[in-house]
Image (cartoon, rainbow, N blue to C red; front, top):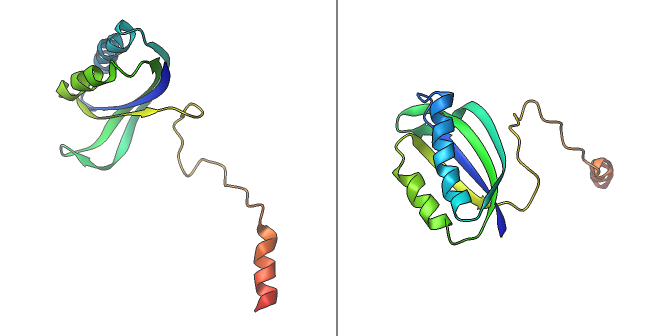
Length: 124
């Protein structure tokens, strides 16, 4: 079994109940083949980086699951057939669970090499 992460971008015209029904249908594909859903994180409505089907925002849902590789092609086929699913991405998950984070709210990176800037000034 391998750990995967699946990101859905649903049309914003869908209600939360409709998204829940679609998630249940998609997740049955995973669990029916012996997989297990380990986490579901609904990020809500987000601005898209570029328009998709003339839409500028979408409802994001991130799911982590464990499964064998054999059921993934069938899952992708089912995802492709859903008209309300604007985009999806399945990747191997090799790290920490994802969380919605804005660049504006994230903590700045700590640069341990602050002294290097002073060394450059002395060389000039």
